[in-house]
Length: 246
Image (cartoon, rainbow, N blue to C red; front, side, top):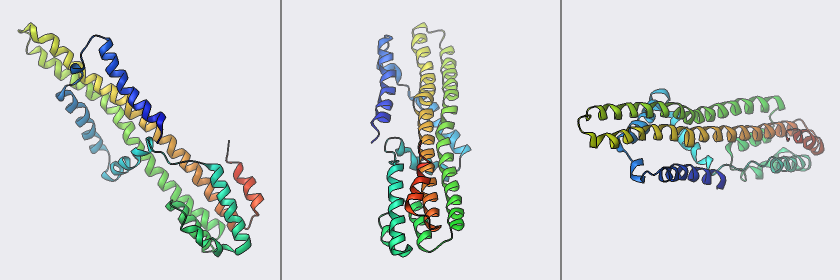
């Protein structure tokens, strides 16, 4: 669990709630079903028009990574690759077969299987580079869903506010309804801007950062597997892979 991201999300809601109270408004003033429908359902509708179902499903799949990100430990990966290299030098590539069952990541399993099958270094790199690019683009497209939501929601908030003010204009003859009506109209603006700047855009940026880190890990893995296939000794491989680290 990433406590920083979780605390940030909770703090985002607290900022809105406490700000409302400190400004002298009631918490009830923050709730408006019509505004909620216009902003949240409207944003979802816009995303459904723009984005394919496959990308939307992938966006839902990677969203939990914001709060439960995969562990990125390049030093640990390098040690693991060096271990594979030492095994292959002592027992041959077939000695790596027991390592397959220990790998949970499908990309790692595929790369290790290509190595065990005796693939040429260039062939291994070619296959894994294509898969890396495909997976990275798929995840970036999914992350962009949240970025797009952050683009649409403020505009829909303004639409909700305008619609609320139109309703207020129809009740100008009743001054007792004006104050409440105007306040309710601007709730949609709060929803739209808050959704974009406190949730959607930060989530998109966080996911892009995690995707970049995952791609860096996979690049290290590809280089390590190719080096093992080329017959490099463990010390050479370690020195080469350390160059990927800052």
